[in-house]
Image 1 (spheres, rainbow, N blue to C red):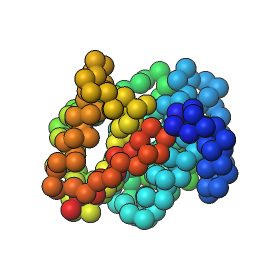
Image 2 (tube, rainbow, N blue to C red):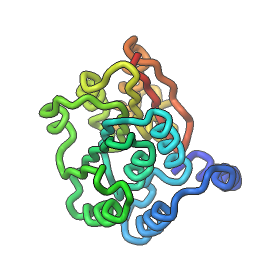
Image 3 (cartoon, rainbow, N blue to C red):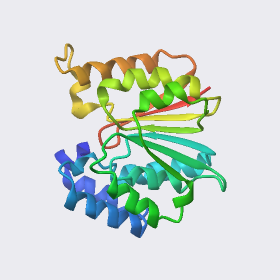
Length: 215
């Protein structure tokens, strides 16, 4: 859920009505996510989806990695900017929900460019020798620091990395947070800000996106 969606829904509606429209397949997927899942707020959503599409279209990536598929909304947004022979690998561990993204991936015109894997992301990153042009992480927050450490060697100059939910509903302002996930997100943001190999900016979109570019 976004800050404006919760605190000022009128502004949130204004932001949506003044953004580019989403493709029909995404409208259908968003509707079904709210109908059939117990935590539909986990979906990237309209505004963030348009951001992901625009970034992908600007990067024109050959090789994309997504950690945390959920119902596949962000995946399909990222495919819109793939180079002609590009691909996206999207990872999740929720077998019970896998039918939903698989359904929409099969319907997508980019179906042949999507590699959906039910695999632990840390395991995948330790095994792969691939280098990624674009990475989007929206998964278990308590592994965010570990993901950053494992992803960094799998990037090159110009690679873009994005971590979602880095404002954590404002909890990052807590001086001594008790929640483990809050501690890890604060550690991640500090780690990124001090890493001279990346340029970064936290975008206050929805719950915050840490946007990184490898120098």
